[in-house]
Length: 275
Image 1 (tube, rainbow, N blue to C red):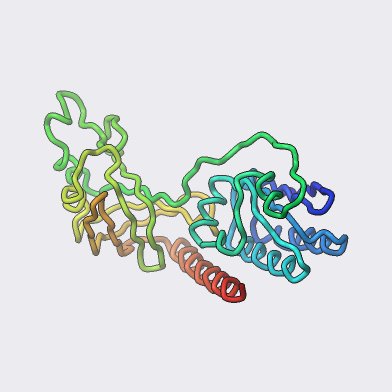
Image 2 (image 1 turned 30 degrees about the vertical axis):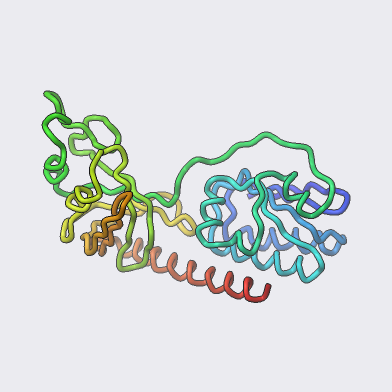
């Protein structure tokens, strides 16, 4: 990761670029401490070009915010990438460190002068998605009518293309631990009702799952899981799965992810109570 300091009259903007993980936390803390020694205690953290951030880095942001506050200043986040924005909102970090859409808005929150606008570039990948596909393809075919299949190949009800053996749905993760995960699914463009979605993802059915650990590991993790609970909702279903086949390395990564999330929640609770 690269850190660029943009000094202003009475505050500074830290532009971060790349992947903000455990390795770069000391460098980030050194930059903050150097600014404080120079008498600059109001800092805008521009995360526009940060592709990845892990739990240790988020903890480092909380620590930096506390240090700046203790010295009469503030830490504000500006222009987070899509990845950072999703993570910040998911863990509730925005309750401790305010997030602004632009550097100008952050500076205005200080009541200080504003920087010149810059170009924008967000990252669109949704790291909270779960890709699920059946181990038994005939189960999917059962829920697609003859009219939807037409005379040619059956059609993927989510994406609209011929699915063959490649059908998959895309859901949003709701929870995750070493024993399993849960997700919510709106049905994509399948046209299925919540009742039909529940029948498709019925208790006891086996599915292949691909998911990400956005604070810990890049790329997808894979597992085979069994549906254990299905809850119909007005806009879709929530399904809880128990892992059946999962690599030991992946299970350990999920375990670490769960521990990291618990750590962040404790840090956030402490920070909000202190306020």
